[in-house]
Image (cartoon, rainbow, N blue to C red; front, side, top):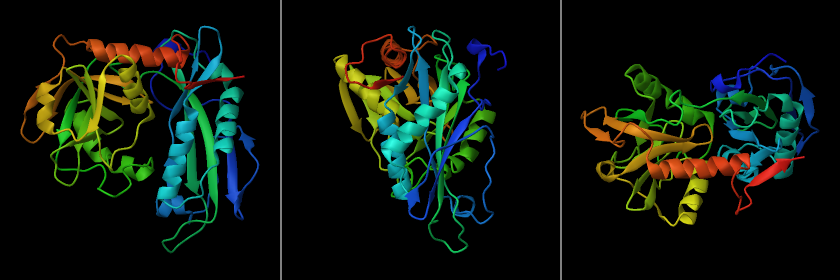
Length: 339
């Protein structure tokens, strides 16, 4: 194993020793297979290549001060992957198989789980693809579920410092009653042009509006949005937003802290009233937002007075990360230790 500078890890692909795989054929899931190859062999007419039958999850494993490795709310990832499979007519991965394969992928690559206190974690990528052959537009009859892992650092290079985001109105991430609420690759493909343009123009990420009326905040390209004001945690409600497990957890922690929680439509104009705002998801946990600029009108919304993360966002971040690493109590039973 190569020497790793744990404190300087980017968020990107990192080759580890093993991955695990399982095929769905003849109406049933087969046995888990272990592979040391990062490559897969699929037919050129596989439905994942032509018709977008592909879904994935993002999870992390954390090493605590006690040296034990923890998974965070894996059941929610398993359920969300089942909803994604259902949404584009793929065979659903049973929860037991999902857990077995995720756990085994972590165990096999235990030496790549970063030490406690480095601000890093082991990223876990479960992936489900249609491998069956179809030329007509219809679901495959064969699927491949695989899990690979790799150590990662912060998603945004700024770490836990405020980033700038850009509101776009000339592109949409997902349509109403489309696939925005499930974690499938097409949603991310649809966000790439806007995201790359925003980065070229000096922003960390895009803030998409709902596609129907362009009046309400939907979500950031890689994460959910939340705002803080009047001791209230506010996050958008929309059928085209991916339900973030991190956001779900932050809402509970906010309630535990004595805050009010509102999940509702958030008009763009309301940005002026927020004391703090952030983007949240597995990759970033929380990325505080310092400034949001509407690309069309040029209007700026400043959400950080001193260039630092706000006190509420900071407390939410510390409490959630503390639970994930085993440094804080886990009152809701979110963490499971890999034995």
